[in-house]
Length: 276
Image (cartoon, rainbow, N blue to C red; front, side, top):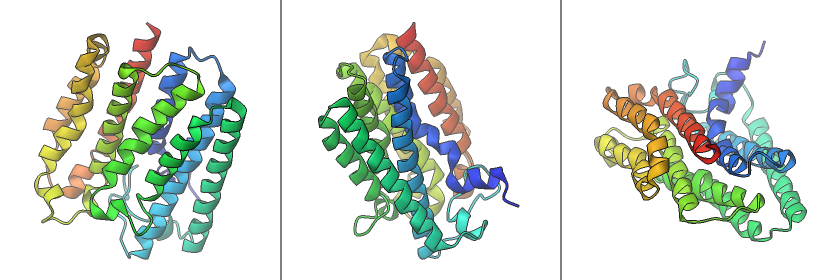
């Protein structure tokens, strides 16, 4: 019998909030006025995230990678294949179907809103998402996956969502997009550190790299001191999270739940900033 917990872990459902966060923020700025556009954008990012996660499992299995931290909500590796016995060819089909649904929904959104600049943003978002796992780029295997994550879940997502809701994009919005990109990259870096070789620079300099990724987005919010003050609770929790990171790569990766919570809290605080 298939358990929901296994499905959630296999599809990495707890990580989907990272995709939805920019849409929630843009919708709150719009004062939650257009439910249809919000739901349509959630469909787009949900299936794009599903396509990305399914493709990661497929290629991880293709590269004979095992599953790590499988007892947590954030396992690393082909959990669906190794632990749920899903056939790789089914995973490949599911990846393609999810990608097609996301693209079709995106095309409908562009036609419905008439905002054709979204074609460029959508193309770039899909492109940086796909080069995360697909050859010849395979940024995830080259230790550059955070670059793709930064743009996919930060810059392009928030700016695209603001355009959909016909909101003006200024420097403050761009800085928030950068914060979301850094937080998403921090999640990716922490979650997948188990895949790096022990002798790699990413592992040897983990704390230095992680502190830069984790706090850079918060620091640049000093440009908007009011928002920075709103974010202080998230910053304090981030500091506590960072100073308690200890142990080997597996133990470090098990702290993924904490950085995900920080991302959720930051999103809520940004929404409160817009509404108050």
